[in-house]
Length: 495
Image 1 (tube, rainbow, N blue to C red):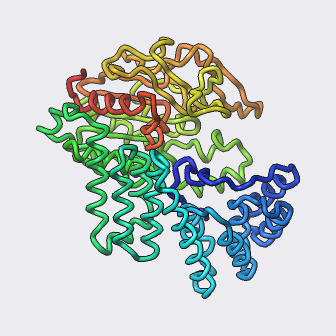
Image 2 (image 1 turned 180 degrees about the vertical axis):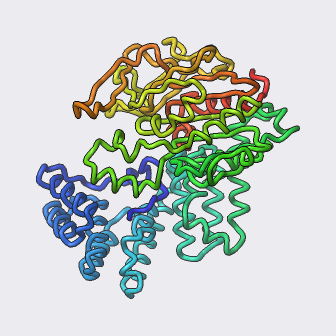
C-alpha cells in the first residue's frame, strides 16, 4: 500500500539529524511490525510498533512514528493514528518530504474525512515551510533540486498552483537536474493535478527540452532528425520497464531529437512492427506481478527461480515475427536482467542465437565503491581493466556500472561490449537438489552487439543501467553507453 514518494536517496531526510535507536530489542520490534503489516495484520502491527516507539521515546526516528500512525489508521483506530501524527507535527526541522510521507500515503485514507486530518497536515505543512525557507539559503546542488520539487508538490496539495510552478521550475532550471529528478516529477500522481490548469504540458516540455540539451549533443542524431526513427517500447508483456514508467523520461527526451516514440500493448505480429525502425524490450513477465507472487508463495520456491515466474512471456510466433523483422532491417535493444528474466525471455534469445544463463551475476571484487559500499551487487567495468569492448558503441566510454544482472554469450560474429571480470560468478538454483550453486562467469559478458541480416541487435544482461537513477550516475559512462547504443541502432555515424 505504500506508494512511491518523490525522494532521491532520502537526501532531504538526511538534512536534519533525528536521533536513531539502535538497540536489538527495538530493531526486532520494528522488523516484527513490518512483517505483520505485510501480512495485513494491522492491529498487531500497530501494537508492536507502538511498543518500539515507547521504547525509543524522544529518540524514535520520524519514519517509525509514521509507521505507528499509518498502521493504527489501517487498524481502524483514528485516535491512536492522530496521536502519532501529532508527535511528528510537534517535531522541529520537518521537511516537505516529511509532509509528503503523510499526505500522499494511501494508508491514511480512512482518516481523511476526520476534521483532525486537515489540522495536523496544515501543521506539518507550516513546519516544513519554515524549514524550507531557512534551509534553502544554504543548500545547493542535488539537495536543492530535491528540496524544490518537494516544495512544488507540497504547494500543489495546498492548491497554490503559482507557487507549485515556481518551485518546480526552480528544480528544472538547476544545473544539477538529472534523469532521476525528471522521472520523479513526470511519473508522480500528484502531477496530474496541474493538468487542470494546463500547466503539466508546459512543464513536461521544459523538462524534456532540458534533459535533451543536457544529455544529447546536437550532433548525436543528425540523420534521425532528417528522417525520424520510429521507436517502439514494449509494454504488452507485463514489462517491468515501459514507456509510462521507467522509460517515460527517456522517451520524452528522445522525441526532442526527432524520434517518434510510442508504447506497445498486446502481442507482436507483422502488423504491429510494420513501419517501426527500432524496438526496445526490457524485463517482461509472463503474467501480472501480483498474480505471480501469489503463486510463488504457494509453491514455496525461490522467487527468482519459481516455475510461476519463469514461464515464457513470448510465444514462438512472436519470437519468429521479431526475428524476421530484425532480419529485414529492424533494430532491437533486448534487455533481460537477472533471474527470472533470462528464462522469461528465452524465446527471444534463442531466436537470435544468444546463450544467456538463468542466473544472477555477482562479483564482490569488482563492485563500484562510489555507489555500492555494502551489498556488493554492482559490477564496475573499466577500460583500464580491459572490460570495455572495442565496438564503436564503446567510443568515449571508459567506465560502466551495472547492478547484478545475468551473464551471456552472443552468437558467432557478435562483439562484446562489457566483458565480465574473471572473478565474476553466476548464482542459480538447482531444483533437483534444492540448492543454490555458483559457477564461474569468466569469459562471458553483460552486453553484446551484432548485425543480423539487414538489422542490428544489442542485448544487455542488466536493466537498472537504463533506469533514470542508473543514467544519472555521476563519474561513470552509463548514459554515454546507452546513448551510443541508441545511436548505433539508429544507424548514426559513430564518433
